[in-house]
Length: 139
Image 1 (tube, one colour):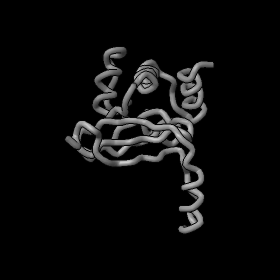
Image 2: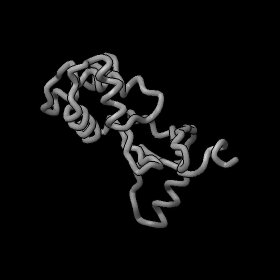
Image 3: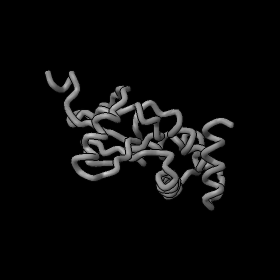
Image 4: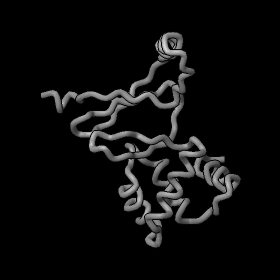
């Protein structure tokens, strides 16, 4: 079963109707090379489904968040964007100036263990987001 079909099955099991507009939203999310805001997601998915309403995009994204299939990214412009949840070895770098996203791969479980011991928190490593300035914005 491909990822899109799997997600649609999970949505159905969670009580959501499986519709072509929802499929378009999922298709765009899964094909995105960068995090997308709801408005961007709406515009891109409307290319597949001109009848797609903005409310459907919001409801679909919220349900995907509940199911831990997408993650919310806090962008420098104070808006949220979304992308599929990845494995725990992929971490995000977000430029505070231009909003560019980059990823790095690595096991940071040792750092998480140190933080956990010092704070008493049990950490969820599904989303680690580092903020800073990309090479272009530093110059």
